[in-house]
Amino acid sequence: MSGASPVASLRALATAAVIGSERSGSGEAPAKVLARAGVLGLQARAGKRARKVTGRVVACPVDPRPVAGSAPMGTLLRLLSNPDAGLITEWAELANARGVRVADAAVPQVLDWWARQPQRPVAVFHALGQRGEWLAALNPAWKKPVATQEVPANAAEVWETGTGPERAAVLASVRRADAARALEMVQSTWKTDGADDRVRFLNVLEEGLSGTDEAFLETALDDRAKSVRQCAVGLLAQLPGSKLRARMAERLAAMVCVERKKGGILRRETVTVEVEPPKDFDPSWERDGIDAKPPQGKGARAWWLQQIVSATDPMEWCRLAGLTPEELREKLASSDSFKEIEAGWFHACVRSPSAEWVEMLATVYLERIHAGHAPAGYCSYEPLWQRLPRHDIEAIAIKVLKNDAMRSDDRFACAGAVPAPWGEVFSRRVMEALAAGAFKFRAVYFVRGGSLGLIAELIHPAVARAYEAWLLGVAPKAAEDQMARGEFPKVLDRLRLRVDMHKEFAS
Image (cartoon, rainbow, N blue to C red):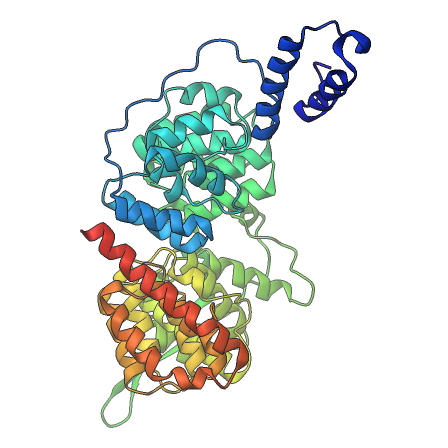
């Protein structure tokens, strides 16, 4: 019976109690049967079989952060009653920014919700403080790999004996505190780690990437696994002044021909830019992540060109031609290789973004969508935002919002891709565009997740009341669509809850 579940053991004990302990053969006294029934009943209600624990449980460390006030905690509990991942994460970000944490009594409930999420928000785990880390270590269902704010005391042990995700999490904690130590950890087990783990650890090194990492990443270019080599190429392509960037710039220069001529009465200078794809594949290119074999339907020379452009700092084009990104695009638009060049520019900007290039490419992307097709090789313009400073992202998005040649939904999709939280200035620009009546929305855009619902999730709280007033002014349009009519109140409720939540933390 000892190996059975509490529920099964309780049923067997009930049978013994009904027919009598003497007749059932157990020989247990009635008092002992009742005591066992109480223990088994408690275990059954707990939903899990009790396990034996050897040794003492280490006490939870003292957390210096104060507990969030009663109003923010009341909002958090309300959110947990009908979980909204976005709002719970925003709550946690506000708590972390103000140096407060979840109250101890609510930690298990938050931790249980967090552990069941497909994408577990790190901000939520951090908001749980020391109590959350302590409880997670005691419950396998809650113990999920996550980088902690402090380097764990057993970091070295986890690195030697943990699973791949556990090691990556502790590596990320160490990387934030001591980048050199993290690099040494990766190097110490590199030769015995599997390819998946090597890729996982290289991705961690992206945070705090510097010239100190270059020598190691250069050795990774000779790795036996292609996935590892590609990851190393991606990191080196992000690193200003890296040898890989220099090699790619040299290859690009060999393909680009720039001619300057002065003519006419005013002797104005004209610039001609031509690109000649490589005629032959250099075997040394393979080490830098350039594949010799093109995908189906693409010519080899065009494929080599696209890969070289993808790994070259986009500003190298400006240095070679002395032109702006817009001027270069205009000069090369009629080139036979322009499709590959443009796709290469996009991927190069994801790795090495500059505001000037990203603005041009984001605008081009949306113009192509407006025309009915996206540029070749593009999957989304959102990756272009990833490494740009927030003020550059918002400045570009404001220009897109003002472009009347594009459709309203395309422009607001661009705004929606600006990472949260939106700044107050950007939020006011969005509000000004709405108030000016420049955008015509169908009722379906009230549906949560659509443009108007998305703005409610992202807009700065200082502008939220103005946005609410605007929504109420156009509310009659929502009545045209049954789905929109049902979602409209939810959009307003969520917007108001966000405003109240920010006020609670501010006070």
